[in-house]
Length: 416
Image (cartoon, rainbow, N blue to C red; front, side, top):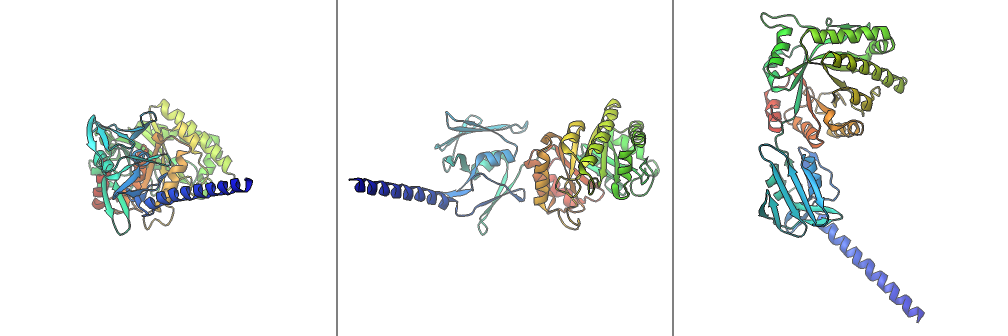
């Protein structure tokens, strides 16, 4: 009797294992087509792999919605998922119910090809329905089994850098929310200056003066920022950070120049810190510098943007969390990972953003994009990452070299 019971138990375990294996195999088979989703030129990770069901591409609803800035809520009792797009021009509320082919869009009923399904705790919906309702452009490549999604055009914050040689595209200034004029620096002796080589105050050209450019920008609704540049190549920044008297003079000069010349803010671009030496010491000294500058800038009615190497660069002298708490926003210089002769490695840019988001709220982060590296074929993939993560906006280095081909492509992704 005991032997018979054991046989029954073994049989039950075997059948149960086979059933589980069959269920697992069935689910795996549905996803075995290896369907990939590319959003704005870069793969979008999913908690559950996209799958073909009855000839329809099914995708995880929340993942793709949130990547496009759409609010998603789950009602466990009703087994419903609600997506809300807040847009003055095209506000939309979509409600989907598990197992039902009837969806509601702004209160009206819309039929689905396949009912939403739950796969390992993730709601899967027809991709074609999603794209049709939320304005994304979708294409299908049968050979590679790839769904490519282009996100809808977005109105996001745009800062442009204006340095020497930028006048050829001066007409683009009104297209930006802010422009940082790179006409000042900290020199090799550690002093603030508006003279020198690459970063200097321009000479007037007839009726066009640096001051008129700044005032015209402000009058047209574009906030002008005084950009202060330096690199620690000759330890000029280290000297300034360690000499409190020199630092105080520097900060006073920066704020006075910005105030007197009609700027609305300061864009601080001090590069090269923390390549060697005591990283914690460098971070602490730079934090103190920025806090001091922030206090004096705010007292003068000026905003402060801090421009930083990405956290996955070789320069470790930047404490994103502290700097994000004292500055109005931070620009991630997600470029110069390589030699800048070709588009930046997008996986590194993605990583740089994700690391920054661990330290700073997305509403304070701006993605720096260099058109020295990017071109009309690559620039929107970088912009797409800023949109995907809901960052405050983008900063383009620089006006003067953007060019019509890249500008035309960028204008398909963001409002200019």
